[in-house]
Length: 371
Image 1 (spheres, rainbow, N blue to C red):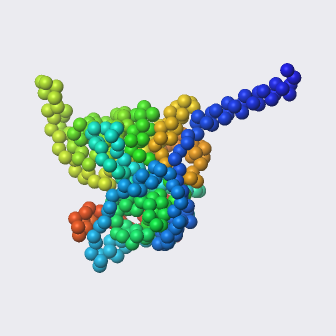
Image 2: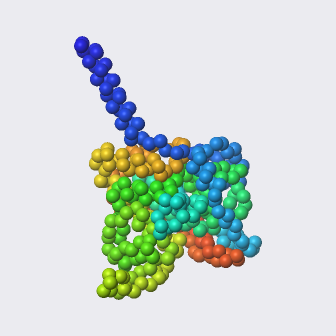
Image 3: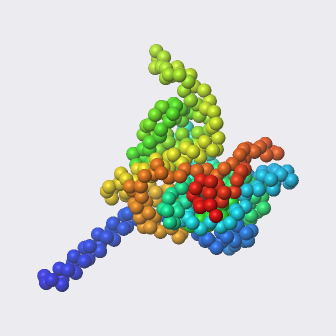
C-alpha cells in the first residue's frame, strides 16, 4: 500500500472515531423555541405567534395549576412598586434554570404521586462579562407579579405557561425582564426525578447541616456533612414539614428511634430556595472530579433524559463552559435571593413581594458599580 492510500485509511479511521465520540458524547436534548425579541414583546404586553414546540413543553403547559389571586385594587400599586425594572442591565451573560416538580407513578413513596407539573425552582445565573464573577440569584416561586400578557395578579411561577403571547419559557423570561431589566440569554428546564438521576450518576451529593433533620420516612440526615443519594437530596430540598432533633439521638431496646423531634422553625419558600442553591453548588463543586470521558458520559446521559433547553443553547458550548469551570472555587459564587417580604392576600394566600428594585439590589450586593 502506497503512502497516499495509508494516509487515506488513517484519515478515514480518525474521522470515524471522532464521529462515534461525538455521537456518544453529545446527547439529543429536547429543545424549544426561545426568541429574545418575543420576550421583549411579551414584557410590553404584545401577542406573538406561537410555533410548534416540543411534546415535553406542551405537556407541562397544559397542566399548570390556576393561580388566581385576589388583591384589593388600591393595594396593587403598593405591593408591586418594585416590580418594574429601573433600567436595562447588560453587564451579564444570563442563564435561567427552571426546576419542575413533576411526579410519576415511579416517584419515591415519600414524595407520592400527583398529576401535573410545577415550576418549583427559578434561578437566574449571572456571569459578569468583564469580571467573570458568577452569581446565582434565586427568585422565589411565590413572588407576586402582574402578568403583562394576561394582566392577572399571580405568583411568578404561574407565568411559566403557554398562552397567546408566547411559550412557557418566553413568558417566564418576560416576567423576569420586567422585574430585573435583564434579558435572559439561555434557559434550561429540568424535572426533579431526572435531577435524582444526575445526583446518582455522580455517586451522590454532599449535604452539610448544623443540626439533625428529618421528615417522616422521607429522609433523616445527621448533623455535619454526609453524602446522600438523589432521592434523599430531593426529599430534603422539597421538604415543607422538616423536624429537628432535640438533644441526643436515642434508640430504645427494640432498636426504634426514641429521640425527641420538634418542627423546624422558619421553613418557608425562602428556606427551600437556600437548600436549592446549596445542592446546585455542591454538584458544581464536583466538576473537578471529571478526569475521564466515561465520567462525563455518565453525567451527559443523565442530562439528556432530564433537561429541556432552548434551541439557541449549543450543547458543545455549554459543555465547554462547564469544563472551563472545573477548577473554579465555587465557594466564591454569590448565592443570593431577591429581597422580599411575606404578604397574605385577601383570599388567604401566602405570597412574597419585592422590597427593593433589582437594580438597587445588585448595587448593594456589589454586583454592579454605583452609577
